[in-house]
Image 1 (spheres, helix red, strand yellow):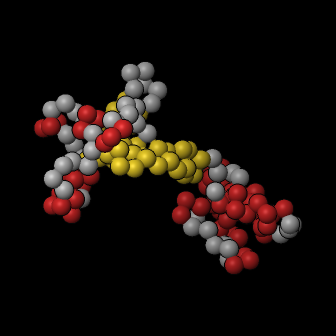
Image 2: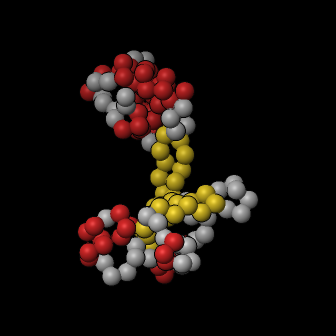
Length: 139
């Protein structure tokens, strides 16, 4: 996303904008889908087996999802909600549609050797043209 925002500036310039634009191109991203829901069928069948984090692997082993039992990790939710609330990342099994409160997708950079080199390059560019990058792009 940061690279897409900088494209017009990079195309119009030969300076720091191009260097930052090129460095951002070194980051590979992975896409995540997160659902907030109340469908307990994504949890273990026996409630005593529920954990704050519950991992499910697809039958082929090619995909995995995690369901976070929000009530178990957040004291305020535990006190204010009468029913369990869950957050499932990259669901292997979809929750019932009527139980879904929110369904969002986002991307985040993968930190690999190319990304580390890009972070070093970006660190040298920080502040140029009043541009500062943080989060996964910063060191």
